[in-house]
Image (tube, rainbow, N blue to C red; front, side):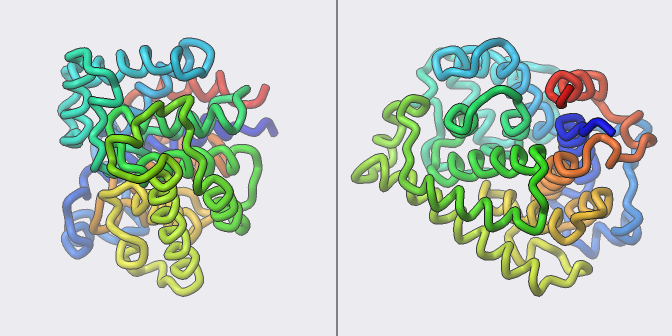
Length: 332
């Protein structure tokens, strides 16, 4: 059977987003009272509506397919795609304030490094990065640099950059066939190796806005927070009760490293049950749509397009574009 990790990951991202959207901002008892047992959660509407998470992931994907993935060629279409998202009539899905603020500055023509919100490490940095983990034919430096640049256009905090890079790398590893059991060790190794790697070719002098003594010190702050988040995931996988809210162990996901950590936890709690991973992620007290979107991206990259129920995929908003991108990026 032909592997379809890109199709699975993109569909999983959007399905998790749609499943978690109605439960965002709610506590678990309220979710259970409204939606019933979490292990039986279903998409509510005839159409599975996505949120800004998938909208912006599609913006990244559209920019990435326009040409060679290099800083000077990626930034203009990425800026244009973000501004188009800003002005879209469909941008009514509770978009993040940081993304809106930065995109308004991009629209006004500010250099991206000035538009970037240097103190923000919100999960907008990595909720949308999945396409760069799936894009074929690029090297590690391109993937890392592009992942950090797409984060930096809105979220300039070093933890946002590192978490976006690490999220894309996790998707890439799983799409290449990495086993869930070794994923945390592989991610920890990657983070440790790149702890002082500042991608100047992609980020320019962004670091100078943050007040750090050097670019190495700037980016190391971000990687250190991501490494601490991975340690929390490791501890939680060993001890967590699948019936307990994952946010209690690894964070509510409003910031980038917590969104990554809690999504990883949901995936690793149910490595062989992708739908259950999405349901667990959607029934959380935190940023449930972003957590479930990333959990779906991980599970789909591992299991492929067959992971998801046909009845869900048929109802998914933007299904045709997601399937077309998946078919383009999956192995021939």
